[in-house]
Amino acid sequence: MGVGGTAALGAALHARALGLDVTGCDRDLSEESAAMLITAGVKIVDSEGGDHLDDRTHLAVSKAITSVTPNHPELVAARAAGIPLLSVQQLIADAAATRGGALLGVAGTHGKTTSTGWLLAALRASGRDPSAFVGGPLNATDGTPPGSPVHIGAEQGFIVEADEYGGNFDPYIADSALILNADWDHPDIFADLDAVVATFAAWTRPVLARGVVVINSADRGGAAIAAALGRGATEAERAQLVTYAVRVHGHDDRNDTASDASNMTRADVEASLIVGERGAVALDDLRISPRAAALLPVAEALAGRRLPIGLLGAHNAANALGVALLAAANGGSAAGIATALASFGGVGRRLEVRFDDGARTVLDDYGHHPTAIRATIETVRARYPGRHLLLAIEPLTYHRTAALLEPLATAAALADSVVVADIFAVRDPDLSISSAGALAAAVARHGVPATAPGSVEAAADAIAAALPANAVVLVMGGGRSTLLATRLAGHLGS
Image (cartoon, rainbow, N blue to C red; front, side):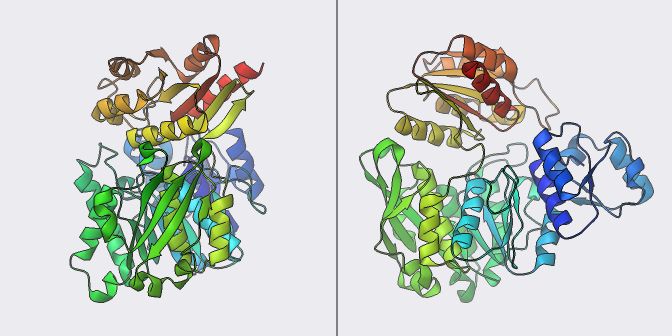
């Protein structure tokens, strides 16, 4: 069910690659996703009833569907027929187990989609070819369809983006893991940052018995996870824990989004961030503790090099170091890792350029959390200096908007002007607790012009009608905001 969702799409494609007979349904299936599924041999069926379930052995479904529409006709039909339900994440985990080899998990509140794709690139540049599920559209690589969230590898091993929401990552019994950061998000299930940290620590703790765990201890949440893992761990388990941190060095101290100086002395691996022109970044002066060097000899081979990073921003540089260390622990070569750090082009909807005629630029980005908005705006400022930055945001969920209203407004107010589209509800039962207008008003209280014109379509039309000269439009959101970006690009290009 919901086969157009990223995780469900990935589950269906991996199941088909293993030769399973797969059907899928989704009321809002995009043409691109439908084409991928049909090409893979997935049969698309009507989602309004359960007639097609007659010969099915399992029904894979996301928790969003079971929680929001527990009485959907297809779910009712499956229960009546005694067809077991399983999560799409369990199906992905089963596919990984069937393929065999090590399962590498990439987790964190921010940056996990990009970093999962980056890890795949680092291992492939090293001559390895594991399979992967990434929570976003991969760029085409050796037969992987553009926009696909999966890579079907030629050898054993599997890389998975491990999402913390509602225990989605619980089925992934990882043999090695990377924790990029931990921030308070999903206020519908996490009361505070401590609850987020506890969830990450619970998932990560068993990994220490099987392989290396790499954690960004320069991040406050990451440091808390590392500390939690250290408590009660055996000496052998502690030996598998590698912390890392990036310290800022360069012309712009605003980019101190990668590190917290108070945590620097506790990191096993440290590097300096070099900030260059137009937001370009590099890692330099890589230092590795003797314990980490013995555990990760490939990483030690990177010490002393300046490592250019192909993606912009301090946050991407920090994530790149984590990717390098996990790759080094799992078959990556120093040359392959360095090549991937410099050449990886990112994944879809992460500062993706939808339009650029030299005077007007439209960027499409999935970010929707205050931390992501702030880091992305800083990166765009560095990349496009001196230009008017208009943030067009579609808030994701009413409960998140209500709980994080002021942090969202503070982050959005770093732009020169703001347009807020209607909130994308997803699974919200109460649509009265916040609104796009409330967020626009909160931004305006910071002295930044902000409007709430309505739907993403209305927002695109309003921006096109009054876009300042020399403007960069940064479209952010996790729902239908990509339609805002493409519609606006169409207006500007016509």
